[in-house]
Image (tube, rainbow, N blue to C red; front, side, top):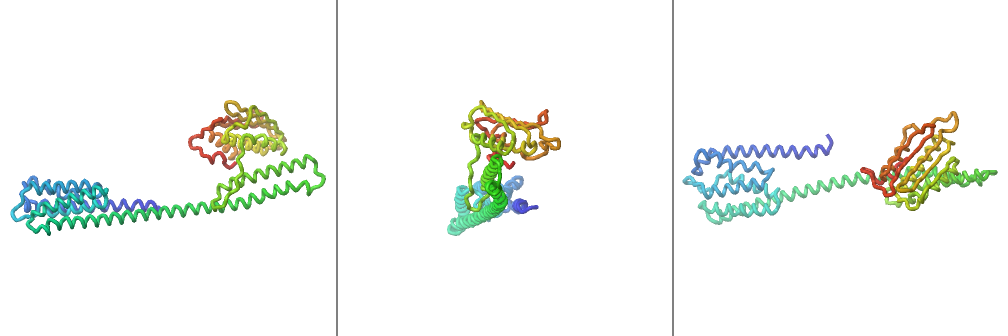
Length: 407
């Protein structure tokens, strides 16, 4: 059992013990009030258990509804004092058991009820005791003022207990919040450490790729124009990947340092992406029907990532195979990325291998309210087809982070 479960069990167990104690007290009060009622008041034998019950049983409401218990006890005490005749020699308006139960309920009201009810209970009980006890034959100072002073002290003590309990609860809540804040800071510090480690590892190697690609034409003699263009394409792609990695790692940073933010790609960047794939040696052909500048940013980002992932899959799993990209900007946005079967007899098609690429593309499409299907073609190739709305409506359960999942 964890600490939270123990914390929940302890108050429940305490309430059970308190309830058992109040039941025991009520039974004892009843056992005392019933047999002695005829000694203090002139009551028919048949009515004695009911009158004694008004003295003993309201105490059962101390925890559940102390205000109601006090009202029943005080009201019955006033009725007994006014209506029920006393036995000769008895000067108390009601039984001692009734007084004890009434005082216990006044204390419970002071501890648990709203302040306006506490005020009503204090004033009403003080008036009840001052008027009924003044008839006991004692001096007014002792009876008329002594009982209200005692009740006032009892209410003040109950309020002190109440404020002590409230202070303790506030302290416990503050301790819980402090513990949660400590745990949150630990998580943030761990995220910052992971981000720094990833940045040190990934950024270092990506930076080396950029440097090697940019300096290769100067270090290697006799490079052809195509080779120089290839190195330039590698350097451009590596720099773009490095900027995106830094932007993603910035989300993990929480050490107070400002992360580097690169603008997210949009639909207008897709032609450059396609050109980069062609420079990298992918035999790609594309057609774009309609302008891309007016496509919303969220849809444009999803579109860019779908095309990017599709080209990466085609290059990885069907190297050398022709790729066709068709983008139609009409009522909605339609993307179709198709590639032929892998080139070479010894090449194995791994499109069916489980991975996160296709799942990531489907998540992007769903996040903006669109759909995406991907699967092999009858001729051995592969096709990705996506329908994206121009007014993206986030799907139920989708979050902004789904627009940029790891691929």
